[in-house]
Structures are given as structure tokens and as C-alpha cells.
Image: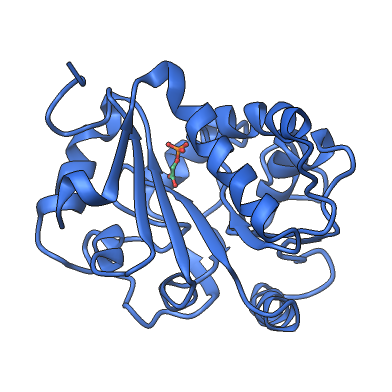
Length: 245
Ligand code: PGA
């Protein structure tokens, strides 16, 4: 991977506006964009910035479809730590008008496996994903595709690793869920465009492995390498070579 060509490195103060601005560009070019979005702390400032940027540019998300990247198993509807709740609160409820369609994992009325099948069917019915946005887990996971996930892993229920469970505690659920459901590696890499986001010094080590280490299922984000639509967007705190000078 050529770092300079595929990686956008921004000062921390400009990173969120950069990513949100590119999302606004995609929505302007393709109003009925089908985009898969993550939750977690990394995209939060992007979602904070997006409504204002859309408004300033007179771009609407009203025809877009948003697909949820992953979800915890076993949390009650409306639980604050549920990924669907976080994405609604952090972004969808703040868009005016909001998106045409939101495709979450509905495990209130069906099993985790059935919810995965339903998400895949809904994505297909929407015409497939145009863009997947991903945070980078400290263990290199993408969505809840934990280390060991195969390149052809489908949308499926998964067991969460200790570090992913620990992160869930930070979102307000203790004891944390043991399982989740996630868009698979196969669904991610079959998408035209993939944005991998990483911010903060805590991601420097794993980002270096993702960019320059061996491609391995032990670091699932390395499975994105070589994808023609991959774009890595990091702030200068996360960049492996230290702050931009
Ligand atoms: P974070 O999580 O954005 O909260 O760091 C990323 C991830 O684990 O996917």
C-alpha cells in the first residue's frame, strides 16, 4: 500500500469536517446513496458535523438509505448502547429531513441469524451498497468481524472478543454483550467504496499493522488492502509516522 496515495491524513481539528464533507459530496452526486455506517467513538464527530455541512451546501440526505454496520445481541429495544439507538441519536434524528430508509438488525422480532438474512435481503433490494464506512478496532476488527474472520465471511452472528466487550462497557452496558451481528467481510469488500476511519494515538499501532503489516485474518482490516475503492482517513495523532509537520 502506498501511504501517500491511499491515506488522507488531516490535523485532528480538520478531520471530522473532511470526512463529513466527502459524505456530503457523495450524497450530492448520488442522492439515493446506499451507505453502511458504523457507530462507536470514531465517527461521532463526523456525524456531529454532517447536518450543518449538508445544510450549508443545500445537500439533502432525504433519498438516501443507511444500513447499520453491526449490532449487539441481547439488548432491549431503545437501549442507549444499542448501535441502532446510537446511530439514530448521533446522526439520523439530527438530519432534517432524515434519510428515506434505515436498515438496522431487527432482533426484537427474530433471531440473530434471521436478522442478518433480512439485512442482506434489504440491502439487495436497495440495489446494493455504494459505500461502507468503517471504524478501526484496536484489535484490527472491522464491524464486528473479529480477528480470525475469513475473507468470505458473510453477514452473521459472532462472538465478541474481550476488547470489543470492554468497549461496550464504555457505551453504557455492563455486563457487556457476549455476541453481536455484523455485515461480513465479504459484504464489505464487495462494495464499490470503503472508507476506513481511525483517530487518536490509541490507534497508531494497529493502523501501522493495517497499512504495512502482513495481510492476515488475525487483523481483519488488512483484508481490505488492494481493494480499489479503499480510502483510509486518519488524523495526525493516529498516523503511524507521528504528527504532520
Ligand atoms: P471506536 O471503535 O470508534 O469506538 O474506537 C472502533 C471499533 O471498534 O470498530
